[in-house]
Image (cartoon, rainbow, N blue to C red):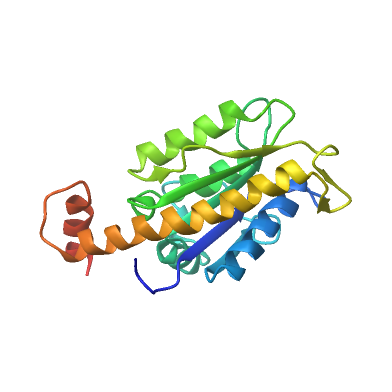
Amino acid sequence: MSNAALNVLAVVGSLNKTSVTRVVVSQVASELAVKGCRVDVLDLLAEPLELYNPDSAHASTIYPALQARVKRADVYVLGTPDYHGSISSALKNFLDHFWHEFTGKLFATIVASHEKGLTVTDQLRTVARQCYAWSLPYGVSFMDGEDVRDGRVISETLQRRLDMFARDVRTYGQLLADQRRADLSGRDAGFMARLRERESTDS
């Protein structure tokens, strides 16, 4: 395993000022930083994105800096509330801005839901698959009031799950990041070969 620090982009996909999603994503971000990861938190309330328009979004003045942050990341921790069994519009809008940047990287999902967030987690896995990314084989879901209250995690069960989640993000994220770098720098056939060719053409 590489000694290079794992780059994690943690995305808060809630625009609620008192969001419990923000509480949990922030806690996971702190745990990953303690484990030696370089963690960048993108809070879509503090850093809003215009609605994605394929004709103009990439010409936005804020796009180059955001794209650099997304490309730098090895892992995406994606937090969203469950809205009608789906991901938040803010998180979907963020995901719509990118595609190739996600290839070969790890998605790890956190869902605030009173319905276990299964359909939301499945939708994020679908995005990962469509972008040739990996996803953890499980997501973390929790309930407002029961698991998180007054800006903190109050459930021991949720805390244990978050500890496991942070451990797995760090462990499997690093394995995938190492293999991704090897695939991009090598000559072997594989699904990363297409991205390798694209990056050599772009450079």
